[in-house]
Image (cartoon, rainbow over all chains, first blue to last red; front, side):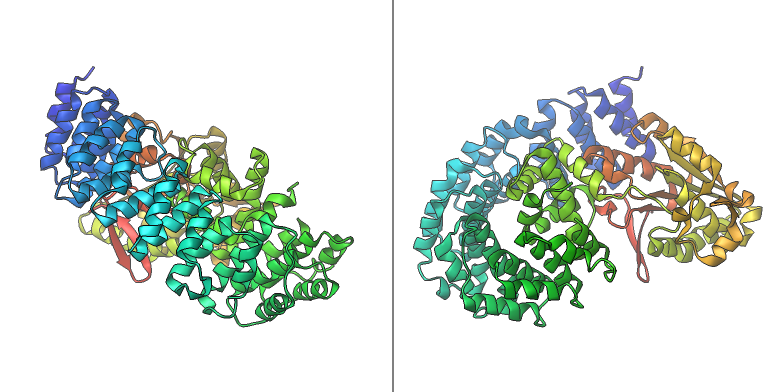
Length: 349
Length: 283
């Protein structure tokens, strides 16, 4: 059996393929003593292929030495090495958290940001101290990244601090990050904090409206429904998809909501407009949810013959939602003239 | 049978977020034209898991699927698994019009009359025989060369199909007529690959997770491994692609599926552009 020492010798050999195999073998050996050889080789290795395999070996070696070595590499001047080291630490999961905690206290702002990138999306236990520090970090970029991460992992424990940051947030990106994080966490009471910051919805600038709409979509109720609906033709057409999604999301939570005549009329206009097909599709579907009226149903049926496939798709789905007797027959009647696979699937579903 | 409940609650935003996750983890791209296709598959998974809130499903796939099992289940539904001849035609054009002539020219200049191609994860062999047809079509001198297409797969049943070299109508739908006339023979409801073309393909068992077996694969000018690695976890995918790197001759090309990017797996290969075609080469 080949020993670590022999692999280490091959790792310094002239042949690239042999170096790749040696690094791979050291990884499978899973011996902590292999780590220094890998790190030493990394310093002088010019082949990207060999470097890639060295990092894979560090992932495979189940030892603290691999974590400590990778943390040192987070300060490398070479961005490829920094990113690959971050990848190793991400793969190590909860085991790397105590080491990252120390690095968070001692590292510069770039290292602190990188540590949060490593933790992103990973609800590993023991990260509370890291996030606690990050939310008070002097660097705005670190704070924003921490807020984004906490939203992704639905960190309810940090909701209060994020709501406080929202109120203090001078930086528009921090405000948007806080809004999105509170959406992720999804607690109804966050809506109070959000409305405190934005008491007048119609005065919100467009660039913040998208994040705000996500919050309303997740947490809003009947009161917000009318408010959002009023903006459909007030705001730019680029915001219409977000407005329609928000209305649909609120309707899901409040299915007994009734739409105003104005909204129904605006939606019908939108379906027949030159707006992007996805927007028209959303409008058809929303009409299906909002109205049980015969005239609206008749429109839905007529849109099954639209020249725009997404409108036909939306109409098929909307008709199904109405639950009217005989709807299967109405949908089946269009099977023979339909050529689009997806619409056919919706008609048959 | 799908229940309407999950289907109706999945929004465009859910699909966008899921689409991003699927792209990040599997390299498969869904544009909005495929929204309904994706939506019905997601609804199927939600129903199987007893979930009725798409937010929870998106969260699970994004952040709570640490071993990637749910992503695999979804992948099984959203990937068609089917293979057919001349699939991903654009990529084959890049191979036929630019990469193959370049490699052949370099080899001819140094008097090396061998051509080695590896179809990794060849399934029932449609891709391997497509390449055999292309080689014979664009490089008629191949008759006097030592050309071999090694078609490997882990599934012995698939390898038996490769060896049989007989295909149904579905597999040959996209074969251009002149290729059909030249390289295939109709036999009842099936088509057989003509013997001279079939002889270029050598089926062989290989497990892409067997690193020692992979080390034996060397000296290839081209590797095709399209729509196979999406079923691997990150670390295994990286490991296999590093073996591909070693298996290629310098100047050799690797082709993954249209939606799979080597750049996301390794930095070892160099990206090269031939008009509209982007390809990865070992320099």
